[in-house]
Image (cartoon, rainbow, N blue to C red):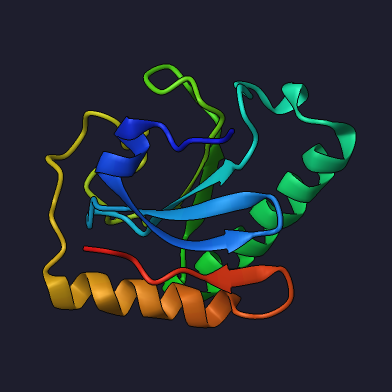
Length: 144
């Protein structure tokens, strides 16, 4: 049975579900940062997914990237499945800007984590959820 890795659960908020993947929002307010986690047990790499699931993950990733680019007027979307710290397959989607704290370097280790205020977090969640609502996406009300 699928279980979300404890580190992902600790560092993010579940805000929705696509056909294949949970949608998480990172608690780091430095960047608009979402994470797709395919709800498949013991999957660590994209090539471990069935061909059908691989295609579905790409569809979900493209939809999320388009929405984030539009919502946040991103200069560049960083999309990556790293897995060096958390082995469970998860795909980061980070909206980047030429004036963000890490630009143009990767974000990891560049800036201290910035917490959202409760109001900022609710606003960010609602904006993303409202932009994605529709076929193949279900809103999940986060427990905070």
